Length: 79
Image (spheres, rainbow, N blue to C red):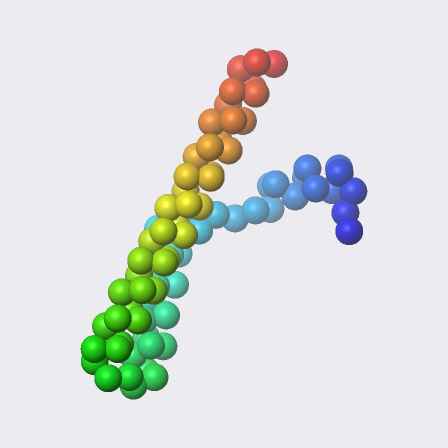
């Protein structure tokens, strides 16, 4: 468990997945699904689900990151 000071300093270490990272993750997941050897119809369905889930998750990460940046800018202006 960490104390409050350690937690505040941890923000500098947080990395955000951006487009290149998410595309690479999606590509690797697709390679795995294709390698499993499901019938084409099932493979396509799984790939669509993975693609949709990864895109939604990535958008949520970007939205959260953007909100954090805006909040930090607002705090800096108010000081």
